[in-house]
Image 1: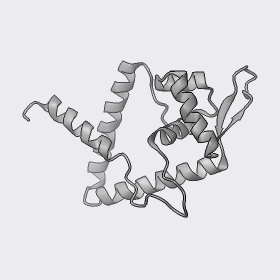
Image 2: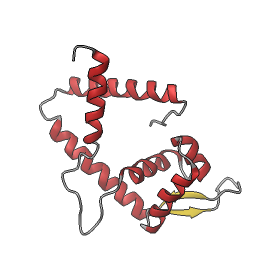
Image 3: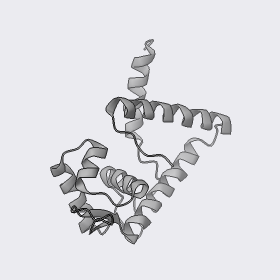
Length: 151
């Protein structure tokens, strides 16, 4: 594999296998958050309450897909539907305390796993890797026309 673009394709395919960096899959009977719930909760956390239309625009998914995903999140108590705080017609999804607890738990488990993976890296190597990942992601987002908010 001498072609660097082929190497990037291969490595991004493999990194998708490692999305879940947590070592522990469950705690006290809690189910591990699935990928869609983790992404949706993360986006709502950054943007505040969002409607199906806003989520559709943010993720480039059709409303029926998001209805299925948000319905599952409602049943699990991760989100609740609220009137639009800005007075709009569409109801919005807001993270519940349980949703926040589960998101924070999941993120902390992922961070613990990443710290184990990166244990032999220097702080400079970790920072350079983070910068390159950010550049890659922002270029993908720019081409897709769907930037992800960053803190």
